[in-house]
Image (cartoon, rainbow over all chains, first blue to last red; front, side, top):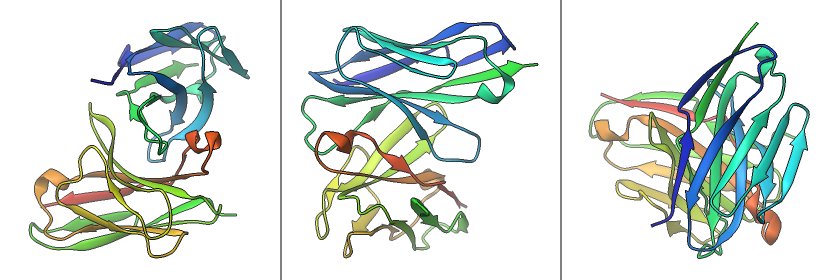
Length: 112
Length: 114
């Protein structure tokens, strides 16, 4: 069964304290792994797509990496405005319609 | 350019009542999706559409119906609401081809069924 598990569920950091969020997946053929950011009361906002092991993407203080079993979202020197829930999703190889399987998310709080 | 717009934003229903949630996108996307988001469960796909006039079941379709009569609109219906359908509902849309992987989401509809 295709599955996505994110850890930790919640993470509290001090401003400037770097850390990583984990997304482990089990999927029958991976057509893509996606990271989204979700602010309270809003819909998810697309961050990155990764397609193959070894691939990396960066955007400001965020860097996403991919292996054959997991993805990491590295946050370098976070700021309070980085506080949000980060969602990981995979598109299985069996999906020809863009269907995604989402993890439960990691809620990040960055304190000043 | 509004992107994906969902109406209404909030709704309270009594058990057994019916309602329709509207999703509209102005990006000329082929694919549209309806998800529900519950605490600890993540986003789960209810129904989706790969083009005007087509619909298909997702992971949790029971108790819901959908229609895509126009390319830009995707409607989600609850015929007889139940407390288990209390949730936040999100609509998303995407292009076809490899770009179809990037889904753009609306702001959500918060539904309570009493």
